[in-house]
Image (cartoon, rainbow, N blue to C red; front, side, top):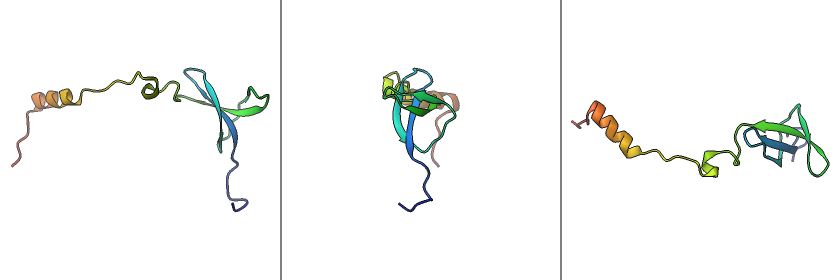
Length: 84
């Protein structure tokens, strides 16, 4: 790598604001807050709104929308368009 042009890539802890779960990874992001990790080291802490611990798709709480029913409702309300 060319020196002096790349951002600092360092260990960072990301914490889910909803569940409180946290994981250690590497990132270029910086933070004012820090946290002591289980290995005894202190790392920057980034609090995020959604992680795989709280995202509906990954937790199995995702809802499937009835697309066919929505199309039928639209056609009832506005009528079915005819092609010229």
